[in-house]
View 1 (cartoon, rainbow, N blue to C red):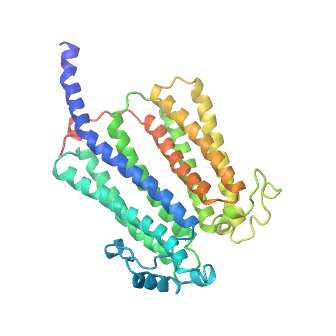
View 2: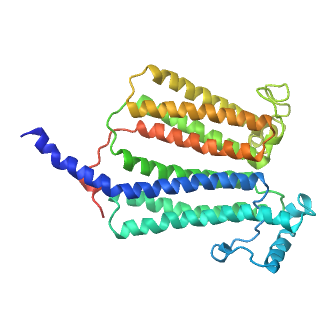
Length: 365
C-alpha cells in the first residue's frame, strides 16, 4: 500500500479538526488575556489601597455603580464604618473615595466579564458540538473554579471589614493562586489545541526540569503575594543586602518559626528575594545547558523566551524595590510575574510526552 495514500485521509481529517478548533483556541486565549489583565488590575487595586472601598458583595445588582449623589453618599457612609477608613483613610474626601472605589469596581466588573466570556462561548461550543470529548471535562472543571474564585474573592475582602485595616495575606495569596491556576489550566488547553500532538520526546529528564522550573516560578509568585499582603516591599529597600545584612535582623523573631514566612515582613521579603534569585539562576542554567543540547526548534524558542522574560522580571523586581514600590513599577512587576509563568508553561508544554490523539478522543460529542 502506498504510504502517501494511506496517510492522506488522516492528515486531511486532522487538518479539518484543527480548523474547527481554531475558534475554540482563540476563545481560550482571549480568556487568558482577560485573566492576565485581571491580575494586573487586582495588583493596582491592592497597591492603591482600594480593595475595601466596596463593602458588600452583590454579584448581580453590584454591576451598576453609584449613579447619583445620594448613591455615592450611601457608599461612602458604608466605607466609613470599617477599620481601614478610621485608621488609615480618616478624613478622606468623597472625591478621594471615588478614585479608590473605581479601581475596586473595575476589578469586580472585569471578574464578571471573564465569567461571561468563558461561560457563554463554552455552552455555545458545547451545544453546537464543536468541542472534542477530551476537552469537556477540563473546561467544566475550569468553569467551576471560576465560580469558586468569585466566592473566594469576597471571602478575602470580608477579612478586612471588621478587625483588620487590610485583607488577610493568607486569603489574598489563596485568591491569587486560584486565579493563576485557572489561567494556567486555560492556557494549557489552548496550547494543546494550537500545537497538536507532541512530535518529539526529549525524555523524562527534561520534563522533570520543566516541572522544576514551573514549580519554582509558581512558589516565587506566591511568596510575592505574601510580600504584597504584608506590604513588606516598603522596608529593606536595598539590594543585594538588606540594610547591610545578608539575612535581615529579626528573621526568626516569631514562633513557631514557620510563622515568620507569612507574617514577619523581614522574613517574607527575604524569602521572596531568595526564591527569585534561585529561580533566575536555575532558569539561566537550564538555558545554558539547552544552548548546547539537541533541542527542537519549539523547545529552543520557548527556552530563549523564558530566559529573556526572567531577565526582565529580575530587573523589574530590583528596580521596584529600590524605588520603594511605585504603583506603576509594582504593577509592571506583577504583570511580569504572570508573563514569566506563561513562559514557563509554554516551555513545559513543548516538553510534554508524545501522546497522539486517537480518533475517539478527538471526536466531537
